[in-house]
Length: 352
View 1 (tube, rainbow, N blue to C red):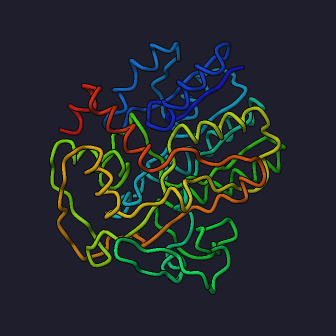
View 2 (view 1 turned 180 degrees about the horizontal axis):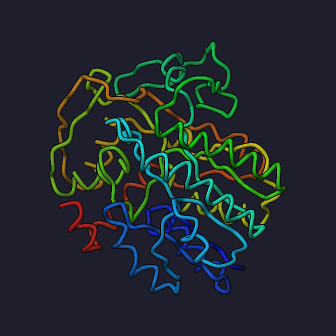
View 3 (view 1 turned 180 degrees about the vertical axis):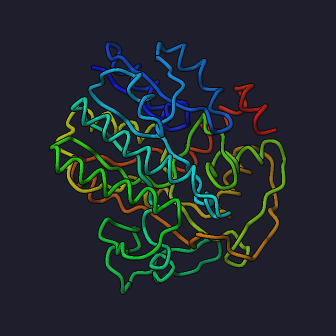
């Protein structure tokens, strides 16, 4: 079996590539990446060590995809992943990568009659409606309330039934537009395309920043005693996200590669869920406990562009469909990232 992973030197792509090679030793795994994101070049020795072919290429260029040759299956992880991308007015790289690039990947798969797993995002859900959800506030966090007026929201989180007819950020818009076109491709050409809407992905080898990869950024700041700040919603650190360990996403990818037709209809939420959710206050406590360094983040009450008070992934549709559910807790995630940073010179050089 030949598998091509786009964005394959990034956090998600590289981890999936290596784990696929470990579980499918006879498979030919190729990754394609333009190495645009800082830190991605650090994964190349890992890929080479595991016998994974690397192509420096860009999904914006169909010829680069064609250089990979024929493939049986693609895992589309390429993206400009920051929700703040394009907010400064320059949307060209964002749109060309997340939308045009996804369409180039779809056309490549059509020509090869190949299947695809598309790594989408929870950010496709509209900001206006997420901010209209009823929330309850406790000492350390926000949560969704029991009684909701909008469909697709409950204390368990946001499901695929949530309304979609409003703005969702420039980043979210590119990913949602890509989802729509991939759905057209799979229906028009009968291709096994799978769309996973992922919550916050986290784990070792994520070179995180404030706007993407918050788990790694937060624990690294504790390890190296760097200042942190709670931004937005009063500056109290009560905003909540759910986190999904990259190992749990890989378990899902393996299930989907084995039975792609089973998942190639509609979309599936895949996230850590209510049990895997955490506020910034709670994350600070966890990082302090694991690192041994206690920090007191500063406060900025002004809410940033496209921010939301709480997002929790309701993956009940996927669990009912396949039996999949995440196995690693937020503490497991932070502990794994902590150990990786302590043991990896590249990570220490990046975060210091």
